[in-house]
Image (cartoon, rainbow, N blue to C red; front, side, top):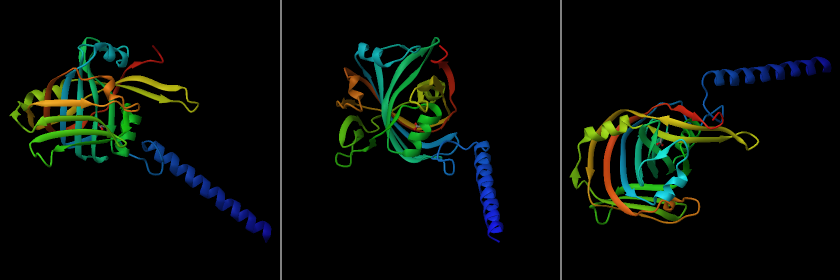
Amino acid sequence: MQIFLAGSLILILLQLTTTTVASVEQKIDNKTLGMPINSPAYPAPPNQFNNREYFIITYETDPAALEKVVPYPLKVTEPVVKYEFIRMPDSSGLGDYTESGQVIPVEFNGTRGLFVLSMYLDNEPAILAGREIWGFPKKLGRPSLGVDPVSRDTLVGRLFYGELEVARGTMGYKWQALPTDDIKKYLEDTPNYLIKVIPDVDGSPKIHQLVKYHLGNVTVHGAWTGPTDLELFRHALAPVADLPVKKVVSGVHFVSDLTLLPGTVEYDYQKG
Ligand SMILES: CC(=O)CC(=O)O
């Protein structure tokens, strides 16, 4: 009797193990993305963004500081940085979040594009999906974008890292309208570059790639410019002020719908 019971128990355990392994394999075959495998942190792309609101401040910086952060084979084209604050209230699969960071005009293989140097945001799935799929340089931060509730006439973008402020952009709210077609063309035509670096299980580099991505299906609902200013503050772990503001060139504010398209690997640093 005892032997019979023990045998049945082993059979049941074996069956359970086989079922678990089979369903895990099935899920992985079914394009399960990321971890945990029984409840991934984000769904498969593409991601659709509705009413994505940008405040982009173009400023001149120190050319030597720029050379230090733009990796080969990208080339710096001008001593300019685009400081971005982006509100994303309606992002499929990711939700509602805000992002802020620095983007640098570059050239790759004779084509002009933008290198995304840093992004600080307040949404876990967007951090994980961005880093793991495309290689976005995302860290947890506390950005905000909106109209000053007291003066009521100023568009204000702010970035806090922890409790410390590291960036503050201001612009006269909707002072002057801009042609939306130009912004749509710029968003759709400009290639964006990322450096995707993912370590292996022993901590050595496993993936080290230059990734390109585009934005598609762009609709621009409105675009504006106005008097603009930007201040950056030093922080050891959010070093936005390493690219100091020498002169503010322009500010642009626009609201758009768009799709984040899949990336392509343009250069593999491990193959050379
Ligand atoms: C998913 C992403 O990486 C897009 C973004 O947050 O800009």
